[in-house]
Figure 1: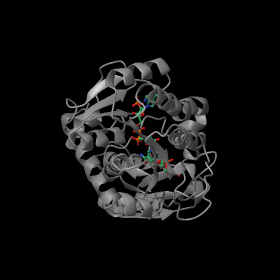
Figure 2: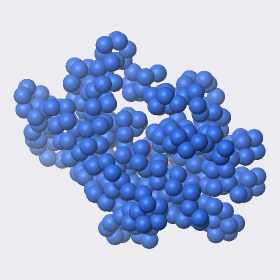
Figure 3: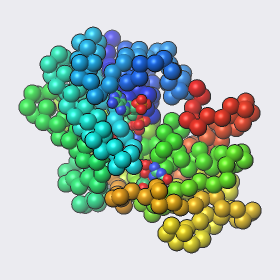
Length: 352
Ligand code: NDP
Ligand code: GDR
């Protein structure tokens, strides 16, 4: 039985990847940085909480990483752990770099020393393209990160390439564009919108306050993207791949599609920070803008070309943008509806 270790098991991708690897017959170890036994709502929601073996590991602590790798001796390591929120990276740039950049090196160096034949996946990001140098972005597009998060991920990417080239390690970097799901964290704009709409619908909130509505992202469905991660480690040799849909939509379009899925008829008024989204039926304000959610440097548009992954891995995105929005709205309506019925409100969006 193949042993797989997933860092960032508490996150969106960690949960879907664990589910996939269990289906593939792997023994799945999930690395959680917390030492308390507070449960994992995402694993619980997928019904796999009891099937994943939880180990405690923080990417900031080298000796901790060494003990875990020594104990498990994994065949595959998927490094999904990160301070993954771009906005927070501007507030905590040093911590973000320590986790997202040096953390990758700590893990790679440990694997090189203790289990050099383990296959390694690094969760790289389209944020490395930042101020894009060509469109659509491919594995060969020059990088131009626009945040401490993007810069840190770029180090993680290159150190993965470097360990592959220097030590012949099976190390892959997956350059993934935004991927979303009902398990997405509430701080990210897609889930902030869908969860916000569900709460408006159930009378638990009046409006949603957002930042830049004009930025565009290439949004796919997370469940499909973890399949790409797994495929990368099943190839004959290691390589880097872009996973994306090759379609970009604005935050504003996301808002429009989400309200439509929740059966609202909306209209826009004003411009820039004065933009408002109005409920045509009641005249109430549903969305407002606050500069609080603008970033010091924005990534205006990302759009990825997944041709290499299609050709070499046989991977392709299936869920279309409008369907993805629909899936997320439906899931949040159900979740908030249940919360309302049981009288238990939980801002994490999970069923803890
Ligand atoms: P999440 O933020 O949902 O999950 C990341 C997890 O990393 C969290 O559960 C967090 O733990 C954990 N973590 C944070 N710091 C540490 C640390 N010091 N040591 C150990 N674990 C830590 O991210 P996603 O699941 O969405 O993304 C997975 C990975 O893919 C991340 O690396 C992200 O940067 C990258 N990525 C994501 C994309 C996306 O669209 N989702 C696109 C491209 C890349 P805790 O819960 O305790 O905070
Ligand atoms: P991103 O995702 O920064 O692309 O990083 P996020 O959902 O945070 O932002 C997407 C875009 O929406 C704009 N935006 C807002 N964002 C948030 N979070 N909240 C708001 O209120 C809001 N209003 C507008 C942002 O300015 C931005 O342009 C995600 C993360 O998963 C990273 O870890 C990953 O590497 C990249 O995707 C690819």
